[in-house]
Image 1 (tube, rainbow, N blue to C red):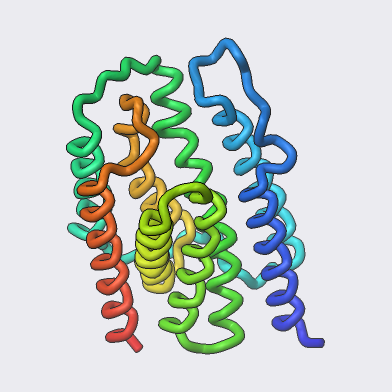
Image 2 (cartoon, rainbow, N blue to C red):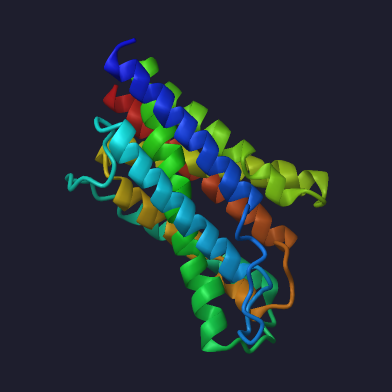
Length: 246
């Protein structure tokens, strides 16, 4: 078996294991520090993501040395699309959740509104774009196909976290995750910078910060609709950009 094929197998195995432990939360999910004003499993989920990300990074460096990860590469400027990525969902969520009657502590805002999504952006982009997308590119030399397949996997992996919600909500959130995954994938293909796309992923997640100030834990209908069309539009834009390059 040649070196590239071995690396592809190793990368997909690492990505699969990372996804399993990240989604299941084993073994850190229920770690909590009672005296902190945080959601019950916030600390455990952050710790879980960071540990899994670090182990995956170490294994990839050893077993897949030819995979491009956090290299210092030039990246294109995405301008308004990045502004739309954060601003439109943020304003729609803020508008839908009003009045914001919560008064969270600074600790809660930091961990649940900022740091948690830093961890999410790091680990999800690592195993989705850093490992899965690169592997599909090596198997089938077609960027659009690799982006689409990775986005589909990315969208489906969000379903376990939506169990118990209304069917229409699950469908919409799965589809907008796929659209967002296409957008992230197109940025990664264009820039070859995993760090850059990870930061953009964090920006998208930070748009949900208004939830920290609200008693609600679900997307209001109008907010969900606006976010759905925004992410689908960004995904379509990403496909057009990559298709034109090819």
